[in-house]
Length: 227
Length: 288
Image (cartoon, rainbow over all chains, first blue to last red; front, side, top):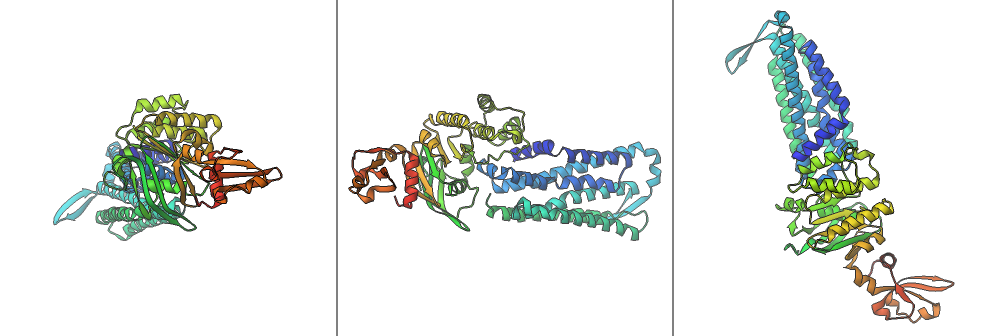
């Protein structure tokens, strides 16, 4: 698995420089403008990376070669899922860092967002500043948007091959964008100054569950597949 | 099935069916320390056989033992640690450099020998920092071979590794394989439709046609057994028909590939190449 991860990171840095630059620019934007929609875009862009890397693997016949070495089918596909999680964690961590830096930088103006949100957590009232709640919501959405594209796309890629499987990508991105828009629209009808962290957490939970189910489905598919 | 390690490769009853093509009960045995050439025309099933043996393609039936291990069993990984494979399309990701490949393989094989790998790169004049996508076909193949030979492999499996190479590079590759095979623990299976390459390298030959192994024999016996008879039409009349594998008639006489054990020692029977024998067998319909 370590060799597979190393290979993917090397390919990422050599073949996906543009992705990296765009993701870095979006993170820089977060440094400048704080929490909000823009936090989600690096996750959405990087969330498709395991799928793109799989396409390259198939084009270069890497999967066939790798199976002649010490790797198994299950190992090959599990590495892509693990890579997706690593990318999600890195993007979320960097976004959290960017938002923290932003908060420190504009601390003089933070009063603007100083309204408090109160949440019922297992019978206890937890009070969080509105700004922090927005930041947490953004991070949770970032987690969801990093996981969902890979979770939906990879089983199709393993089943139909990269060429046909890739056709699902626009659908997945459209679906993810729709989810986000519906979240923003639901905010309009909600109480002003309140961030629905429960819904964001629920979506992240669904994304994680979808990711796990997707891995299980892919294991079943890939065992029967010829490379 | 032999799993005691006497054989580097032991394949029995290997079957794989596709629409319009099937591997039909393929049996291959390669004793340790020898080089086996798998000869067959394009589409004969050589690559499918190799991929099925290695588990890249799921088998419909058959037993495969490599270096004494069931390749799909619990100790399959142990066997794979000691096998080096070079496929027709090498399979190294296009953006990676030879240095990168070394780093990836060091995390793939327990016995990866970086010093040996880099010395092979130097010996083969391969650039270390050039992306694989910029390599010529010959360079790609040489990098694949360097990677396959740098983790203490005892068995090399090469699928069409010499096809598409210029004669100089082909000779270089064959020399490397000869060096490898000099160690009596080391065995090689090499498939090719370029029979002359295999004639230079192999101890054993297996002919494959339409998904079946026509025969597996040691090369010298095969070359001893078959010959090319040049004679007149009248002279050919006395040749036992069952000894004739193929025949070509012209105004100048008859040229036939014959089984010398049946035809006997006749004047005009010269040496046949493996290619002559292989083509004759295919024409005969693979009955021998």
